[in-house]
Length: 172
Image (cartoon, rainbow, N blue to C red):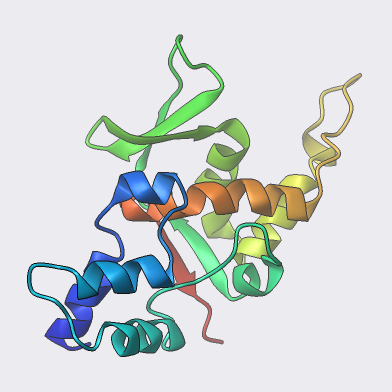
């Protein structure tokens, strides 16, 4: 990766707040680069090249996630910091004891153990099939792999932007 490509790549993660709102995409990144104090004249070409090479990942949280999730493994980078009495339904993830993001328990559970699975879609499959972990007298969640994937997908950009996770492309 050239120095310019590295700068373009880094710019993709600069605004965690916009990632949390799912407002970062190819077009917004190109606009950011073209309107920066030192505009990048080759922004579109560079972004397209990084996506084509798998160095940036593009997906629609409302679209078919299976193809993208089968090509990547989710690896956690942060520390699980648990929940708070004020927000018991959210589990915090951060670095050096400082929270960077709070996610629902299902996203936290998948984030915690996804490193064991061959790809992110398989992690969603396994998490959806909770029949082995249901207490006696309780019912399985009934969630589908697609529902689990959507829950993960809406939190994934922020998890990556705050360096609490990354997607590792599967090359074999």
